[in-house]
Amino acid sequence: MNMPKYERVASAIREQIQAGALKPGDQIPTTQGLIEQYGVSYGSVRTALLLLKAEGLIEGRQGEGVFVRERDAG
Image 1 (cartoon, rainbow, N blue to C red):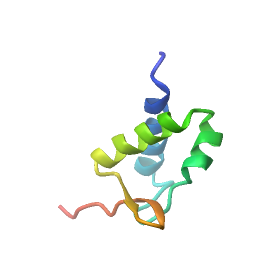
Image 2 (cartoon, rainbow, N blue to C red):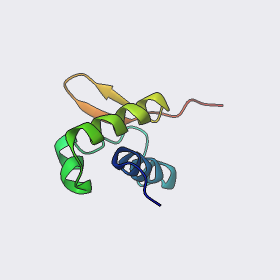
Image 3 (cartoon, rainbow, N blue to C red):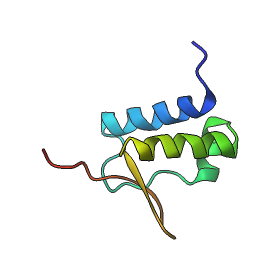
């Protein structure tokens, strides 16, 4: 199974959120941290984060970082 690098990163973060390892309000690692953790390029990390944002799982906060979004009630 050879998925694109960005999808591998997105899947790993998504699984951590679903498993409760990353909870709403938790900050996810920096872009540089993710690059080092997964051994991928800046572009792959950026695409993965955009994908997770589009899914409503994470949100960027200007000057603060990227956080797991609070789940909408209901």
